[in-house]
Length: 505
Image (tube, rainbow, N blue to C red):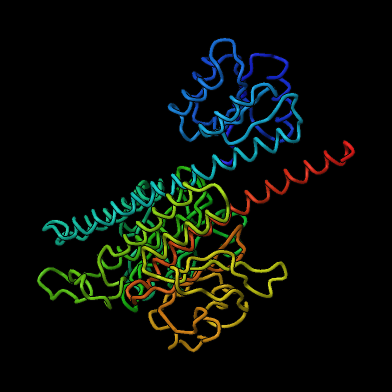
C-alpha cells in the first residue's frame, strides 16, 4: 500500500504530463485522466490510492469529482490543484477531507513531497483497516474453535479439531499454507498432524527434531519465530530440504500448555505479502488457544480446572486461564485502530491510543517511552494518566524489567513484578513508587527497538503475555507512522526554508 499509484486529473495536457514527468523519477507510478468522468471510471482500479485533482475540469467541477470519489473510494487520498483565485473552493475541499493542496504553478519538489505524504496516509489507513479486519477474523476463529470443540463431534474427533485449527490459521493470517506439528514416535521430534493448502501424505516427511530448523527451534525455545525473508535470515541459512512453498517468509509459534510445549503451528505463503510482526502476534494468540484445545483430556476424563468456564466475578482469575480470553486483546487492538484512524496530529494519535488501553484495562498510567539519540535513556513520549497517576518521565535503559524489555526486544507481563529478581523499584513502578501488575512491551521499527510501552493495570487478570504481545504490535505500528509523518513534515519545512532563502528571505 505504500506503493499506491497516483491518478492525475487535469484537463490541460501540459500539466498532466508535467506532473507525471515530475513524479516518475521519484519512482511513483502515474495514471492520467483529462475529465472528471474519466477519473471516476479509473477509480475502479484498486491500485490507485492517491488522486491529484485540478478543480477546473471541462465536464464536472473538481469538488463534485471529489464528492463522488469519496463515495466510491472513501480511503482515497486527494491532493487539490488550484489557482490563487480558487481559495474558497480549496477550503471547501479541505473541509471535505482533502489531505493537501498545491497552487499553480507547481514546484516539483513540493509536488513529490505532497504526493508521498498522501501515499503514506493512504498506507496508514489501509494498514489499520487490514489489521482491524484480521483482528475481527481472529475473534471469530477463536469463538468458532471453542464452539466446535464443545460440540459432541469436536470433542470426540481430534483429527477434525486439528483440521479446524490449521484452517483457522489460514483464514486469520491470509496464509495459503499452514500446518500443525505434534509429537512423533521418537523423543523430542514432531510430525505433521494436519495441514491446509498443501497435500502432505502421511509419513512422507522426515520428523522435525527439537532445535533443528524453524519449527524445531520454536519447539526447543518455546518462542515464536518470524522470518520476513529467508534469503536474508542468518538463523536458517539452509532450508533446502523443504519443498512446496512459494514464499521465503513464514511464521512459527509453539503450542504451550501449562509448563510444556505440545507442538508447533506454522504459516507461510501469505497472500498479501511477507509475514510481519502483526501476523506473528495473531499466530501466537491462535497457538495459545490451540494448545488449550488440543491438550484437553479424552472424553470421560476429568476436565482440568483451567479449562472450565470462567467465573467472571473472580477478579484474580488469570486471563490466560480463560478460554477465548485473548479476545479482550483483539477488541482492544480494534479500539486502538479506531482511535488512530480518527486522529491526524501525531501527538494526539499516541495519546488516543494510550487512552483506549488505559480505559479498557482500568490501567493508569499507560505510557510510551522512546530512546534518546544516544540510547542512554528512555524518555516519556506520551502517556494517559487517568487524571491521577503519572509515569516516570525518564528511565534508564539497562535496569529493571523495563530495561530487560528494551534490551531484549521482548515483553514482560506479570501480576506480581516485585517478586521477579530483575525488578527495580525505582524503574518498574510509576511516579508514586507503588508496585502494581505490569505490562511492558518493546516498540520496534525495521528490526530495531525504539522504546517501550508500559501499563499498570489494577487487576492481575490483565497481566497477560498474549495481551502484551498484541499491544506491542499495535503501538509499534502507530509509532512507525507517527515517525514517518514527522519526517515528511520536517522535509517539507526544510524545502520551504530553502526556497525562502533562495528567493532572498
